[in-house]
Image (tube, rainbow, N blue to C red):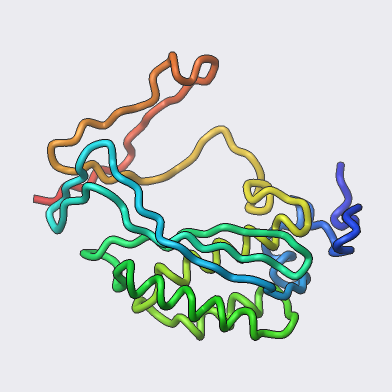
Length: 199
């Protein structure tokens, strides 16, 4: 059994290390951070095959990668997902807003992670900048978790042998599940609990 809080052996920081028992809430309420750098860049990735839904067809994704570095040197990464027919931002707008949000974060004084996330929500409000906000939050939480030596999967409650997610299958798509050769000793079970069809 691990203690709820111990201290990192890193000379860069004496931040308390959050255990899986205390988790995300403890991190946001107790860990103070200061953003030293915030950068973003285009993340353009061609798809193996076109993805087509009723509102659009994609041959590649044009997202925004976000990198945040804390004053202690820990780096976190996030991604602002862009799908013009769904998100309010396009890639160009997201690049500009991510840069502006990064400048805003660098100007903030040292404060608790939860307060930084609150400030970010006010700087990037509502649906208009939801994708950029999500990417900035991802990067901030990733950097904060690294600063206390905890992987994200542990921070959010630990391991499980099941995962619930969703997937959109485009028109003329084939759903390809992992084959046994590529995942040699692992076994996967694919179970559809809810199916939504748009016509």
